[in-house]
Image 1 (tube, rainbow, N blue to C red):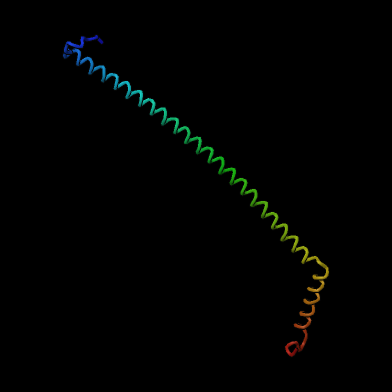
Image 2 (image 1 turned 90 degrees about the vertical axis):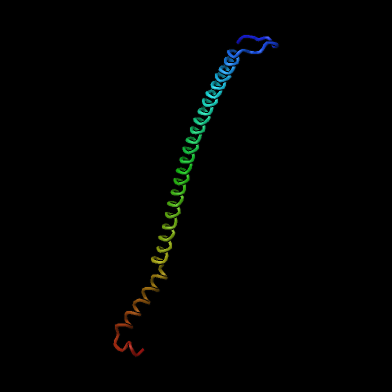
Length: 117
């Protein structure tokens, strides 16, 4: 750009050159801002994908841990149920008492005159 004398008015050509230079600079700044905005947006998308993947992995780990804990608890409950059933079924005193009671009831029900007792 040509330096001008402060006392001399600018010509139309000089004014147009200034306007065109200002427009070029404004366009350059707009393009720089658009480029920066695209970079920011791309980085935000990458970060969102990272967060989504991290969240997916964490949820999967929580589900696996929960499933293992539930399966272990179910196994423990089944073992305890089997243990308690075995104690009842094979405890000699209880088993003998139940057998005697069942035999007594069977005799009573099959004997003649059981309706009168």
